[in-house]
Length: 224
Image (tube, rainbow, N blue to C red; front, side, top):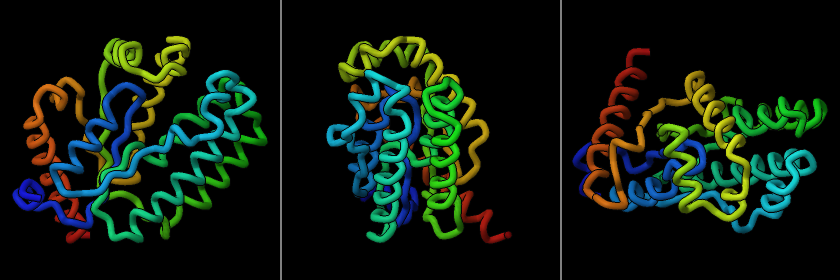
C-alpha cells in the first residue's frame, strides 16, 4: 500500500505478467501483489484436464487445450474487472492466440479448420471494444540459456521432459509476439535486472517504473 501511494498507482489498476516458461512470472506476480496491496490471479495449471495429455501428444490435444485456456482466461478477465480491478495477473490471454495456437497450427499439430475456429472464437470474445484489457502488460525477457536452465532446475516434470527444441522455438516466438504487440502498454523487464528471491527490496525499482509508465499513459490519453 505504501509503495502504491508513493508512486501514484491507482487502486483499480490491472497488470498482466507475460513471458515464456521459466522467467519467473509467478514470483513477480506474488511480489507485486504483496507490495501494492493487490489481489493475484494465477493460471490454474493443476486443474487443467488437458495439460498432461497435451505434453504427451501435441497433435491430438492442442486444439482442446487452447479452447480450454481461452474459456478460462476469458472468465477470469471478466471476474477481475467486475471486481473493480486491483489485480496482478499471471499470464495474459493474448499469448494463447499470438504464440501457442499459431505455433501448433504451423507445426501441423492443429488443423486448418481447428485453427480458424479457434481464431474466430478468440476475435469474437477478446478483440472487441467491450473486452476489458489490462492497464499494463509486463513482459519478462531473458536469454534462452537462462530460460532452459531455470526449467531444468525447477520446472514441472512434464516441462522437464519436453524436448529443448520446443523451448527454443517458444522463446523465439515470444520475442516475435511482443515486438508486434500493441493492445495495451508494455513494460519490458530483463530477468537479470532484479532478483526477488534474494532481495525483496528489488521490487521497488520495478514499481517505480510501473508508476511512471501508467502516468505517461494517462497523460497521453488526455491529449487524444
